[in-house]
Image (cartoon, rainbow, N blue to C red):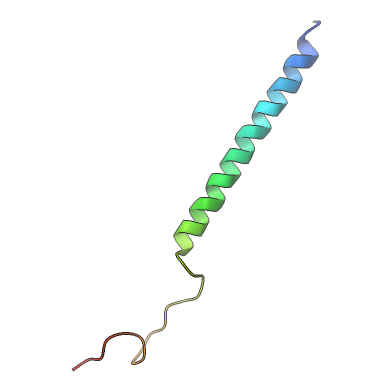
Length: 52
């Protein structure tokens, strides 16, 4: 019973660290999925190679 309080605090700290790591990885994944820019790519005649 003496160390129960310390164990609870350690459990919370571990849970918070894991939660922070998951949030960081999700943020990184969203950023990578968005690509280099959040702007949509242009379509049409001006967007790319000229067609023959």
